[in-house]
Length: 433
Image 1: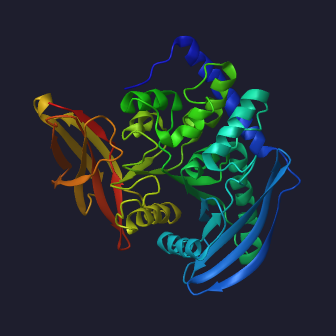
Image 2 (image 1 turned 135 degrees about the vertical axis):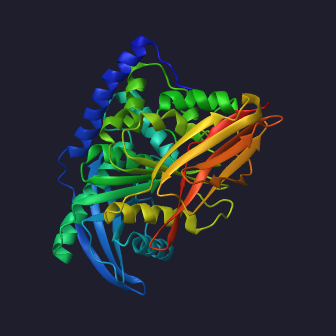
Image 3 (image 1 turned 135 degrees about the horizontal axis):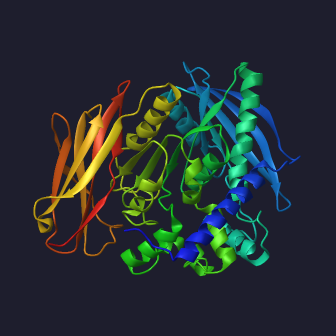
């Protein structure tokens, strides 16, 4: 279902889209004398070498943004023209260093982790969504285009790319040209907007940020749940959701919605979502998938929440899929080419059929199916169903539920250099017979 806007609202969105591009790009490109970086330490780690950098990305609203930036190079991995840039909050820990090393091994390329996205706490101890909401409210009150927190978050990544290129030239005598950018939740949000802001971004892998096309997502969530998810309560409490119908509020959402920038998002994209993510509706992807311009793939993780870990699924699933995508993009290996079709199976009341065309064909294929009394599948248990790999297609069928609602998607397994990874189809929700 596509959310329809009146003609004048559509015209306004086009005007806001042009202004939004200018506001984000102008902020990112604005000269800032406080930018600097230095290599603090080169650490010999049992898994390889860790380069520990300190970076000041900018001064935003009189606040200096400082970051830890670490580069992970496992034993046997060489510098590459494209490296992975993962953005996240906090600071480095022994666990994050091991994660960075493992990701670099799977990608067969150096991986950089940029910490402190965003710098927090700020403004009386606010963090994460409460902090973003605070800056949105300040923008609505003042009209100062620099206020939305996503802008300095994006600029932090852009300045990290500057620092990493200079570091590689100085430390390795090697030219890094491109970046595969990734991160989860609001760092996934930042990933989308960074890709729209800088041509050095060769590919992206946003995780658990299934909310593009916000003009359609919020009404769809309200219709599906009967109320807004409690996970976006920070925005509801500040009267940002539902969206105010003022000109400034419309401009705000257009400035921070990656869907508005879709003409710039033409690089290969891997979207990784949790099938039980409590932030978004189960079929949120369907409200923007066909609007995207990029070569794209999606991976759903069954029985995993927003952190992709809640129900103790196979811990290699996300790491292998992200690592395989990076290996494909960095080393020039083609990703599987996928297309699919959801159709009614005979009489519409009887169920649905999913047909997937894949080149190459996967090693294995299956359906994942979940049931719920309403269209709220956040607490549903996903169960594996068979799908048949035929000579030219993968085919699976699902019966309509006797009561309530049922949702399903297809999943295919592939391998690169012995590493198994997973790609999915879009979701389809079935109503009762």
